[in-house]
Image 1 (cartoon, rainbow over the protein chains, first blue to last red):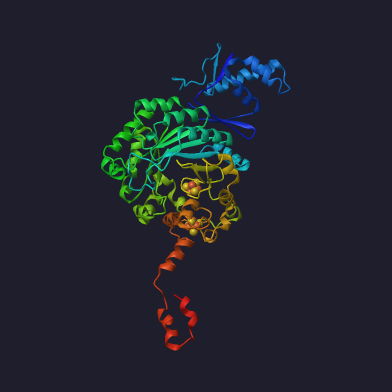
Image 2: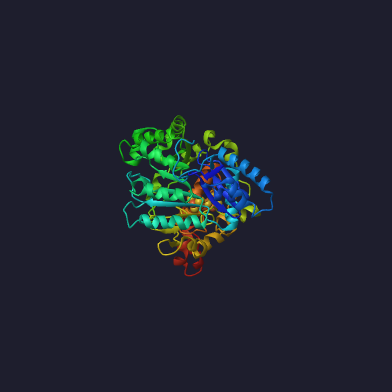
Length: 102
Length: 378
Ligand code: SF4
Ligand code: SF4
């Protein structure tokens, strides 16, 4: 699975947490440190399992299978709110505005 | 405002982060509104490169909500280039515009760039009233067309209705129009003095009886009895509260790079052409002074019955001559709401009253120095 930050998102670190506003319904979220790492690493080109292995398992004491399951769940959740794009293929040019994703 | 946004604002305050900022891109305008406080000539606006650099500095400083306003923002030829830069820096972008220049193509582009909301000034649902205020024939029709284009792109549109004597009777019509167009509606009965200090446009204000009526209109204020109830006396908590977000979590930058606590608070704190945004935010002596003020420090207001509920604007107070003093526009609103005159209004009334005991003033001249101290009686 590949993940990319949605191009129409507002986001800013505020203290320890990432504040994210969904472009499609203006819902506001805060991401905890794990979700923040995932969101920041979501470049559309790095597979999710690689992000989990390199960025999450090295940072937190967690079993890789558990971390992967949580990451997939989180990615799907964020995708539901239009914050992340997910695909089985690398996501090309994730930062170009995407039409029709309302 | 959502509870989470409020919580984030409080966290920003604790962390000393400029959570929101308004950047006016130009003071030039294609409308000539009768109540406008701006000088529309271009006195050397920031260049595209300067603005992009500023946006980078603002993002680094933690600005999340960024409002582009003016003047009319669409008069800048580089407007979409600036917007693209802001989008790449992941701001929550809001726009304020008269929308006269927004057609289908611009609306689609705004949507693609993830603009969070577009606030559009509408003064009346009747062209003869709206166009008389903007002094541009056909401007209401153009703005309404723009709202339709924006709504068809799924964008959030807010119709902002500034109220003054000339359009006071139309706010129900504007609200109905907003509903019909699927826009949100907000009204503001405050006219701001000109930036050069000229207060003559305040004559356009709606006046006390119109305000009184507005504050009893349950469509706008909810429970009128509650809204207009006499205020509770200020307690220790309200006496130590902050006046507003200006300079605490919010700031304003003019098209010339001047840094102020708020668009309605023209106390210059520095210029982003000479200093980094974050350095002004952290180190400006003026901002430190603004941040130090609490209700208990205010002359008049700290003794006023309205202290705990008043919407006192420190910027308007500053324009009246003292940022630690009352704002007469807010005293008038507090009075229209509750019927209780503020400390400031009472003092003004006292001052304006014809001198009493005038005959006693004359006495010293007649009787020598016996009553010489009485000249202060009047
Ligand atoms: S009503 Fe006037 S004097 Fe009273 S608190 Fe408000 S601004 Fe100050
Ligand atoms: S009260 Fe006045 S100075 Fe404070 S944020 Fe509102 S307009 Fe600005």
